[in-house]
Length: 239
Image (cartoon, rainbow, N blue to C red; front, side):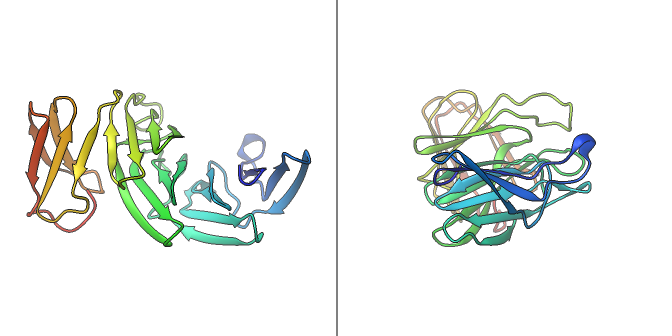
């Protein structure tokens, strides 16, 4: 939905035959439909909007995942194209402030991913962060100054469901809360070069740090609510 209109893009025919090559647009005020060509038709994609921009991200084209993000400017009627760090399907999208988040999804083998591509429309800058767990076929919602990514599967197709929730706030590009409970969690500074501080309202049971590829680099059990971790031995990157 963007500026009074609903945009419906992509999909495939009966038995996954063919791919829809148009975007259907419904004008709520006039109760009329129109169509425009879809530059890069595909199925299993996800859509979202921010400001006057409509985003269609990821999806599948002939059994190959797409890294495309088609962006439609609802004011000018022009298309532009961006790409994610990797091709994914079943992504979830949420926007907050000047940023739009493309979270999770799975590869062509249906293996879930834990990456989030974040685009800042005010600066045109992309960044990449990670979810606490890989998610595919999950849900996304904006509530106040937070976006939440919940549920989904964290194992290959047909695997066990995920019950946790990752929460991002407009005050940070990092995960503000993780888990099925609403516990206040602060991780700072971000970015960091020597130490990071972790504060939580409730007791921390354990801390784990993963790199962007999902490799476990640090693990510690603790019964405290505050913790400081030395990261001077970590290479530059996203964790």
